[in-house]
Image (cartoon, rainbow, N blue to C red; front, side):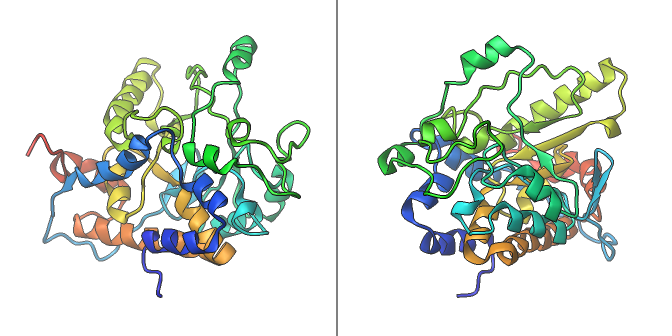
Length: 318
């Protein structure tokens, strides 16, 4: 079967992966309400056409904190890539480099960050759970979201896989210990950016879908930068959660993000065809985003933001 969208890759990955690994990647916490809502919320936001505009030359490239990337799509931090293929995070890093974008390496990577940096042409970001208040860190470190699929599967890493970026390189760790659900605690004063995220629906179930939370997040960023007399170019606003179509990317960009992050679809591509599978997943999302942007009458993400008031239609506003 030809794999022509990200949902096809998810279906194919289900056939490729052991049940325990697929469920670990795919699951959300408790009843998985937020997991579903992250995706469904995009369908509740409509786009208006804008026709008879010159869209012959379109450009998806952008700059994130001074780093030029070819697409406004980053690879979100996700754990245990070597459950999907032997090369794991190395394959993902190579794919991100081929696509000219940024990999955010998870703290729970199954490959050491030094090894990933060696094969990555583009600079790699690292997701680090770190708090200024060390006592608060100690208190929060044992608070986990419950993924019931993982409980049923008694999830643990297979022999030979470990987390080398954690002290001691722990191996065969139970899911509740491995997938840290540390609460958002870091003070944002002086931060270079914010990711609007609910941890992929894997922590507090029934929390707000990220695309619904985005307008408030964007406004808070705007007010903070004005108050601190900082230029918008000095700050990055990202979003993750449920992005599966180019129209999702367009909506997020129009509503104020500089780029989106995708997690699970990268894992599906990795499981199906390693590095090439990740490249293909990102290519599909890039091409859909380009088409959607053009049909909206825009040629760049900056134009999408300028058109936002006419482009985005919320269900309660008509």
